[in-house]
Every structure is written in C-alpha cells, then in structure tokens.
Image 1 (cartoon, rainbow, N blue to C red):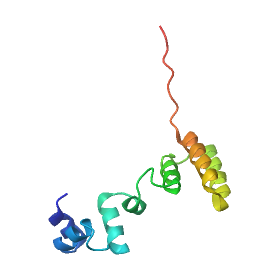
Image 2: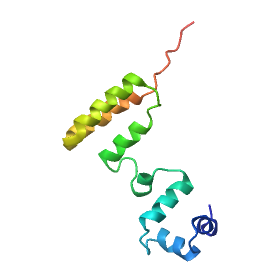
Image 3: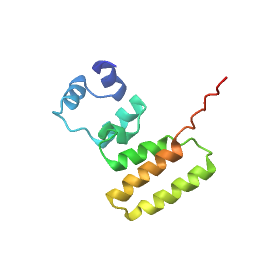
Image 4: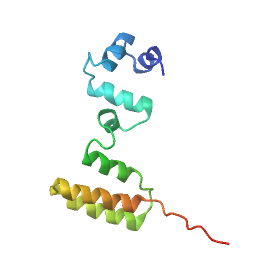
Length: 112
C-alpha cells in the first residue's frame, strides 16, 4: 500500500508516515495499534520478528493452535503456568512443547 493511502486511512500526514518508516519519528502506541489494524497483524508483530526472541516464538506457536482443541489447550495452559518464573532454557523447551502441540499431523503415504 502506498504511503498516501496509508496516511489517509490512519488520518495522519504523508510526511509523518514517511518519517516514521525512515526512523526519524518515533511512532506513538496509538499509531502502532492503527498500523497493526490496517495491516491485520498483531501489535507485537510490528515491533518484533520471528526468531528474534523466545517469548515471541512461543507466542507464534500459541497462535497456531486452532480453537476447540480441548486436550491440546489444557496442555498449553499448563505450559504457560510453568513459564511464570521460567528461565531461558525452560522457555526454549516450552516452545518445543508448544510446537509439538500445534504441529499438523502428517499423512502417511499408502503404498500400492
């Protein structure tokens, strides 16, 4: 999307969008939220990138869980409770556990 359209949709000037993207302006929390809504992403994704931090990686894995996955969700909640005071090594293990919970089952090929 071009900067003039973004500026119009966010009700700010084009120069403000340009300077924010160029790093000359620090965006307000409100503007970050507006960007996230406009681009249909989580606000966290505006500030961080996958692989940048263990907490973000965990959040990404959690988002992959479809709703109404009872047993998986219960397991996930237990993992999150355990993370309340976790160190980095524990968090890495938790991301791996969550990834296993969110992994789609692979289909076995049938031989003819």
